[in-house]
Length: 162
Image (cartoon, rainbow, N blue to C red; front, side, top):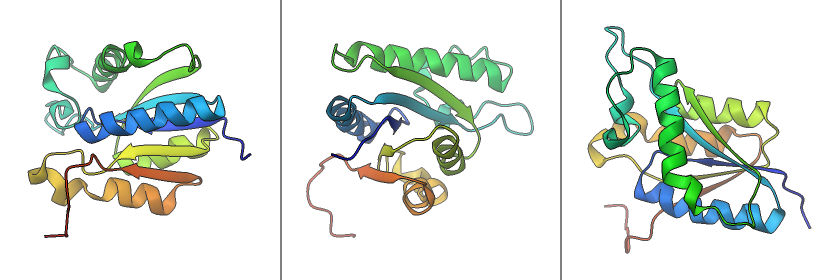
């Protein structure tokens, strides 16, 4: 059997990410691997305004963050709130990680620096109006990652590319 020690689950808190989380848990159980729960925040814009609402459900933010570090801490809290109770005894080794930057670049760099064996992420988790600028995340991660990449799309019926 192929050995997998580190699995990276990437989330944007979307329904597609929720579906991908189930697959990530299955793989972590199967391989008895460490599961890295990973989110990327867009940095504060040049005027110091938060871009976090674009990458995290605004219900999880207290809107008092003045720096990227504050947003990172809030987002780690949001990850724990959303995912920690979904773990069972079969997956005991996990870590919550938040980076600030461009999602595809941060995912690829983290995978390289942390000996990730498999990346699991949801496809098209962002609202359709935002896809034009951010659709490249799954494509670039799939193309440039140093390991196996599994992209999960929430089953929403037939899609004929229309």
